[in-house]
Length: 119
Image (cartoon, rainbow, N blue to C red; front, side, top):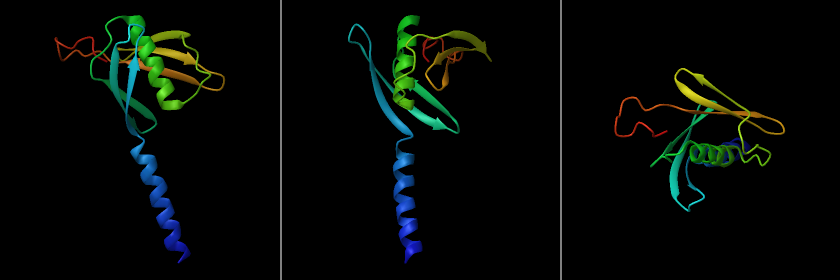
């Protein structure tokens, strides 16, 4: 009986955890433009995809900051990046917080001329 209760509770907790791993969010920029995106957990990392990507680099960085806030719920993340680097053709930015350092990488879309700026 106790074993059955344990498995039911474990299943309920894991189902709620797994359903939260594929989530939809909306970023609203300074001009009140809405950008919908989805976040999917892939191992230790998270992948995010915007339906339509912001065009300006500063708006992309604000959207990336919003992604970090949406995923990690860490209010101490700095709004500006502390450094940037390129890794395997992805442009990455480092955002520091009180306890953690987060890396946010934008992959180029080299396979689509029409959507080259999409991240």
